[in-house]
Image (cartoon, rainbow, N blue to C red; front, side, top):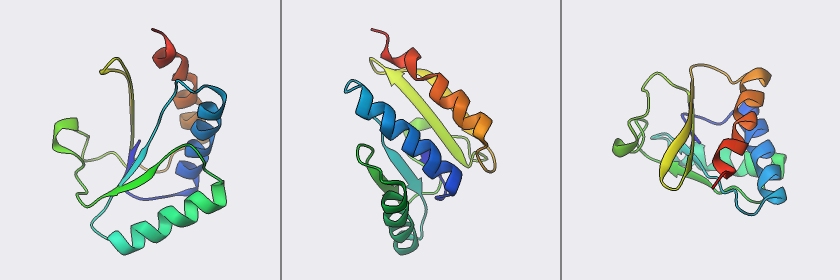
Length: 117
């Protein structure tokens, strides 16, 4: 998951993914907050991890708001969720603005697609 900032909806999504990882050890995830404001981002990630009781998903930062160059993330997307299996992207969700409950449900519904061998 790549996001430009932390938010309650993002925390909710990460918590749901964290729970899925607890149920299935094959599943892995990480969050990258892309921001030049390292101190603020670090504090926000620590707060999100504590409030949401996230145990299995590493929360990381990248000092480039554009994201990793090789990933070609949309510059307009606030949150991008990529899911891959065997080094192939199987699911790609990009959202502009706040995630909604419907968005979170759509993302979590796609998890079985990456668990297939």
